[in-house]
Image (cartoon, rainbow, N blue to C red; front, side, top):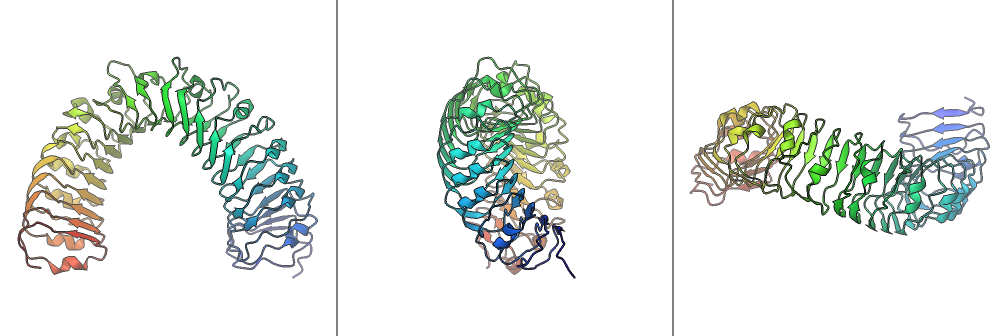
Length: 519
């Protein structure tokens, strides 16, 4: 068949398992071979095609991974060789593709620095160098790319200060400079970009305070400055930008909030964790009524008692390591919770009745571990859709309530390091989804329950440091996924069943300090 007049080749996702053709039609304008298991060598012949407008070879594992010689072109508009394993330095000749509007080299194994000639691509709109292993600095010539709307240089090895080269890029909508070794203050030239919607400078070493005024960023929807060393006060503009939906200031050194905060009701995701905030932070943020995810972990905040706070849309709340001394009262109004973490605080005394009577049908994960709770566990069986219940390292007492069987979806149950007593209910053996069961360091007595009566999902059974006795139940033979079985430091007295050694995934078996047994 004669393909000399072929103009368009589009085989996206078709497993052709074929080498790249050496002789291609000079009429080709559009080539899309994304994820086709293309093999062989990318030759310079593609860059000599007089009419080629788009060359898209993304997600192929080329055998010969050297970038071929790039010839000047006034027709090529889009070049995408991301995730092809192409390696070596990016040549200066990349700047001769003067008509390029899209260039994607993401995920390639390039070396060296970004060439200054990149500034010659004055028609470029989208530039993606994510994860390409570039070193050095951001070239100042990027300031010439006035048509640029998307720039992703994240996950490279760039260093130094972020240069003030962005004030000319007035069309820029998205900028990603995360996971580098950038130092210095927040780059002020960014503040003049009126079309900006997404900014990610996370995981660098930026330091100092944020600017007091960023009123130009009216279209910003996502702002991620996490994992830096920024300090001072979180400015009021960060909470008042009218389009902002996600704000990540976590893992910095911020010490407070601005005195007068004008809250943006559109904010849905707020992460202020791992800072040095203290005092009535919850009161200051109480008007963020559309929050869906809220993380204040690892700060020193005070109680919200007596303060009217409502987060009716909240589904994920993380308040671990916050020095809380009581359950936050605003939880009464947060009826859509799915994830709740109050671990590692100073909450003491019984679980309040209002908390245990909440109808959180949507609650999937509850973590109250590392507190000083003294309640009976029967107060926590009301959340029927729980996947994970973690209340380890408390002072819970009394028996394990039989209604726990109603938690049919439970996958993790960790009640270790408490003062629970009496026998372990056999209903645990019929909880079909249970994967991890940890009851270590309690005061349980009686025999081991018949676990895996219905479930074969258990990977961890830990009953160490109790007062259990009797034989290992035969039902454990059904636990074919079991990796950890720890019943040490009990009063077990039995003949060791040889079949226990046939469990195919068993990696850890602890039987120390039990009564005498035949092995």
